[in-house]
Every structure is written in C-alpha cells, then in structure tokens.
View (tube, each protein chain N blue to C red):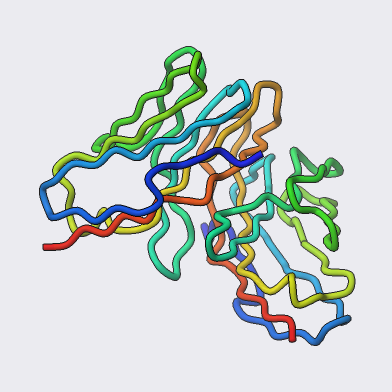
Length: 111
Length: 113
C-alpha cells in the first residue's frame, strides 16, 4: 500500500521554506526520501530509521514519528535547484528493502 | 564504475509482443528492484530481489516476470505486452544490509501500441 504524501504540489519563491509530509497506515521500519528532476532518475536524499537514526543529505532535514507512522521533509531557504518531484518511500517492519513509494510532491521554486 | 545501467532507453512494442528490459549494476549490490512510473501514480514496485536466486512480487507484478541468476543482472520480462504497460520503467539497486541508499538507472520509456 502506497504511503500518502501531501501536498501534491507546491510553488515557492527562492528563500522560502516548505514541508512535505508522508504518512502510512502500516507500522514502518524506515522512511526514504528521493528527489526526481524532470526526465531524470530519482536521486537519494535521506533515510530515517525506526529508533532515530538518519542517513543522508546534510542540507535537508526530516523527521520520523514512529508512533504516528508519519515523516516530514523540511526544505529551508529553498533554491532553484530544489525544484523537482519528491517521493517518500516506506519500508514495512520485516520487509527486505521492499520500499513502496508515494505518488510524489511536485515542488517548483521560482525566482 | 557505471552504477546501474538500463537498456534500452526507448522501446516501442506492438500489443502481444514480448521483450526483456535489461538492468545491470556493478556495485555488488544485493538488492535490486523494478518500478514503473506513470503520471499521477508515482513509483510502483513491480518485482524485487534480495540476492541471486531470490525474487518476490511487489505491488503490480501481473504481466511481468523476473529472474536473478547473477548478482549483477536483474532483467524484467514482459510476456505479452499490453497498452496498459506503457510506462517508464526504473531499475534500482541498493547495497548490502538493509536501509541503504538506492541507486536508480536512467529508465526505459516503453510504449505499447
């Protein structure tokens, strides 16, 4: 079952902040965040693990609420290069790196 | 070090034809997956593998077969192509142990007419 992302789309001016949310109805072991630019492959941003460990991008932060099965990606002081579609992927407890992605959040940063 | 290589990049098939999408990685990764990407649907998992000889179904496996005879290769076979299989297909691999970064290939754009 795909996780639910919100919002589906957002437009920002350079320097503004944004939050992208991801939620699941299942107990989660980890949440993965990727960004995809138009016509390109998704690129890894971050993994958040049950228990608090994080791996990934230094300039992007995220949170993982294990009790609520929710994660949020925080984009601060947005740059034009942040434009793209952001996907959260979730891994259920016990899965073998079986990551299920949401439908994505399209982020556009304008000058 | 090429990463994840998918071939072909583009393909047009007629309904009923079969074909194999190739995926190869040179990072000695255990885990490999196939996703399809359709507008408004995100990335949907077709099949995945946790190592040579081990495969399992994802969310949308019908109409697709996979095998993993080597660590490096994870081909995706369309048995009898249908217009509903028109999509962009991505192969991904990730390293030993769980919860590691996935590397995606550049995708194969498939059109079934």
